[in-house]
Structure formats: structure tokens, C-alpha cells
Image (spheres, rainbow, N blue to C red):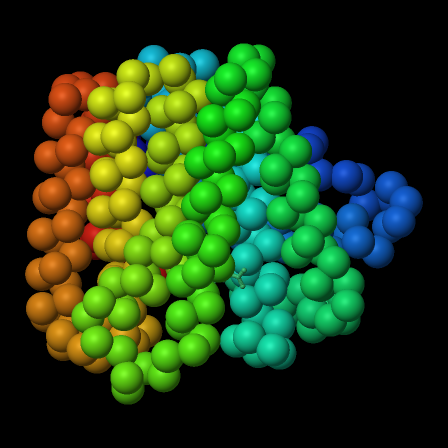
Length: 272
Ligand code: GRG
């Protein structure tokens, strides 16, 4: 199967499951459920849940076990975007080509919609059939989304002005703000599949490398941080180097790692 077809098929699967896991628009209290659905079901790439599915499949796991976890991950991602767009943070009026959540529903509802998505996401991490797996997934995701992960990166991004960012600071921000949730998605897939510790470790390294690549490419496209510090050509070179490193980590998967390898190649060469 071509990678484009794989991504399309898995995006559809995730979108259908998200639709089912989210409370209905008419469910009381309607205002919050409408805001949650609006933000999650907007036109996103679903790269994090697809990585979780691909990682789980590469390790021989079952799709029905990872699907709720993958949806929980996308909900956490949607919450981070809602909160990031708020006036107190990035103050963005648009997200995914339409008004951001607070523009559409008001600030108070947007804050609560983000909170509710984080909570529902966590609830979905308790869905796999093995309780030990649920415990491990909760640990992986709470770590990836918390103060040593996404939130930690966001805090330093707020506190250190772009002009004052040296390479270690940039690396701290980017491995956490964007990279941690991407790495956690790949790791959660391996954990749900019941992969051995060595394999989980290698897949986590893969996730960390492509997570950083994702942000470096974002910077190149937006001419920010990495692109400013190193120049776009060197930043691109670093992204390619990290992609090679990522692929080395999963060489042990052989043919089963093909989809993840192609996703890594796609992320480094994306143009939007
Ligand atoms: C405010 C809790 C909190 C966290 C903020 C992820 C994040 C941390 C902020 C998002 C800011 C941002 C736009 C960063 C650039 C990289 C990024 C995460 C882009 C959006 O992710 P995509 O491209 O979006 O996967 P789609 O819409 O495709 O899901």
C-alpha cells in the first residue's frame, strides 16, 4: 500500500472513532460538547494518532486496542492547540482554516473545552483490555503532556525571548513542546502492542528524533527559532541527519518498520 493511501485510510479510521468517543453535540451541556467537537473534528493531519497506530502495528499489536488510545492522544493535541491560541498565549484568531475555539465559542468555553479534552483523553488511556498496559500508557502520556514534556516546553517558550535562545534552550523547548507528544504517541503504540523493553526504547528514540524534526521543519516553514539560529540550509541538514538517526533506531523492525520509515521521510520533506 502506498503511504498516501495508508495515511488516508488511518485518518478516516481515527476520524470515525473520534466522532464516536466525543460527546454528541446535543448532549447536555451542549455548549462545551460543541466546542470540543469543533476543535477536535476540524481538518487536522492526525499525525500523532496515526503514529501510535503505525507503531502498534509494527510491533504486532491489535488496532482495536490502540484506537481509543490514539483518539485520546489527538484530544490532548486538540486541547493544546485550543489553549495555545488563547489571548494569554499565542492569541491566534484562526486554527485549521477557521476561527479558533475562543473566537467561535468565547474564552471561558474554550478554556473549559481544552480542560475537558485533556480529561477525556486520559479516560481513553484506560481502554486497553490489559490493566497493566493501561497503567503504562497513562504514565507515558502524562509524562509526554506534563511539565517534563509539552507543558514544560511551552513554559520555557514563553519565558525565554527568541533572541536569547541558545542551542540547549532551543533543544529543551522543541524536544518538549512539540516533540514529547509525538514521541509519546510512538511509545504508547509499542506499549499497547506489548513490545519488549528494548523495542519500546528504540521506538521511543525514533519518536524523539522525528518529533524534533517536526519542529525544525515547522521553524523552517515559519522562519523561526532553528531556522533563525542556524539558517534554513543548516536547519534542513540537521532535520535530515535526525531523520537518518530515527530510521536507524527502527532498522530492527525490518519490513514491519516500513510505514514508520515512510512517515519519517514524509515529515522531513513536508512543505506545510
Ligand atoms: C498551551 C498546553 C499548551 C501547549 C502548547 C503544541 C503546543 C504546546 C503548541 C502549539 C503551537 C504550535 C502551532 C506549534 C508548532 C508545531 C505544532 C504542534 C503544530 C500543530 O500540529 P500539526 O501540524 O496540526 O500536527 P494539525 O492541525 O495537523 O493537527
